[in-house]
Amino acid sequence: MKIVTLDPFDQPTPAELRGAVLAIGNFDAVHRGHQALLEVARKRANDLGRPFGILTFEPHPRRVFRPDDAPFRVTPYAAKLERFQAARAEIVFILPFNWTIAHLQADAFIDNILRKALGAEFLVMGSDFRFGQNRSGSVETLREAGFKCTVVDPLKDAQNAVYSATRVRGLLQSGHIDEANALLGWDWEIIGTVVKGDQRGRELGYPTANVALGETIHPAYGVYATWVRIDGEANWHKAATNIGIRPMFESKIALVEAHLLDFSRDIYGKTLHIRVVKKIRDEEKFAGLAALMAQIAHDCAQVRSLLEG
Image (cartoon, rainbow, N blue to C red; front, side, top):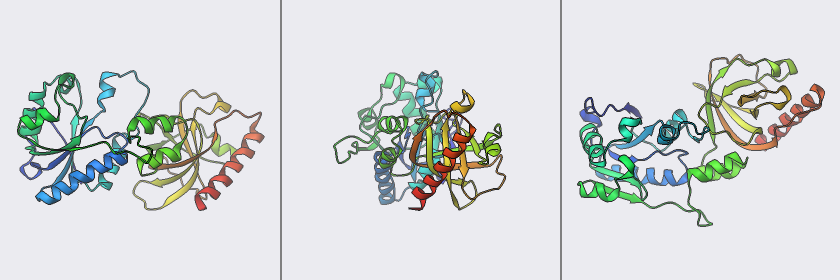
């Protein structure tokens, strides 16, 4: 999968990357509805004998328009690329979203980005897709401009509810990870670099790999059963992972702390992929270290049973 960061006002992309069938959207969460749309685009590209490409925006436009919002992304950049790879995209075009792009009129977006930069002709998008300043451009705008557009209606579940990133966010924030994963069609994943902590876990006999949440949405704070993979390695390791502010130690910064079971290597500076399977309890403050250690031992046993079962 090729990843191309666009500079639409500089020069067009190389000839071999132009003319792909493009799925267009933010695609935060890359949930089952997004996956259905991407599969339509892939099949359309295959039928036409063209590459299957995705045009997406980084950062998410909401980060530009509402910079003071709390972290909200289900799939920050690295996680989103993983899902695009799983969807068998051949090319991913990243359009850096900034105020210049936000203020482009719809016709300028068409001319500068879709035509000049990408040489696009065949487009696939959701029925609610909008583009251009004040969301002035629509599917009809694109069709009037001569593009061949395939519109994919929202996918609904058995209860007739639409798959959406908003639903996924709500489930993550309420701790219903298994339900969120059902909407996603994959286990929600946090990706980050292991940083030095205060060594509390090691002192208690349960060393942790600490990862900052960054722009990733904060799920309900608590202890989770997770699978952890070190970037560049194939094996997944069982882990009891605390996500939160550690009220026992009066921390104010939310952190992901993964205790990998049956594991003792030094992995500082490594990138971890943490797949979150199920919440097993809320975060809480204990009467003392002995009570905390007893609870951690119980958590580890519960995680082992859950992931081995």
